[in-house]
Amino acid sequence: MARFEVGDRVQTGGGSLRTVVTAEPDETGNIVTVTDDGRYIVGHEREDYWPVPPPDPRDAVVEAAVAWVARLGTRFGRFSDEANAVIAAVQAWKAAQT
Image 1: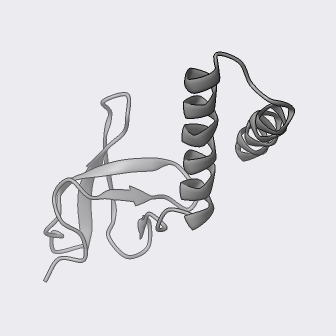
Image 2: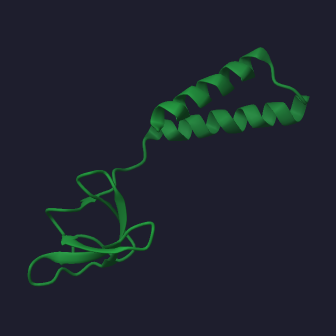
């Protein structure tokens, strides 16, 4: 049984993301993946690739804060000091993620 399915996103040891093209490993355990820029790479299913970690639940909190601030700005036509504080916090958080 294959560890991944075609279309799964996988991560390499270096942190790069790839998409699985052939999920069933060959006799040496290799599968084929494709990079975001279209290069096909062959690597060992168990030694070279790991499942992409699940999304961080904090991302949902940040997205909710952004949506809340956007609604406030639309409703009142300007941002309050509290909303500006949320905007600054969200921008700082996003900058820290890169």
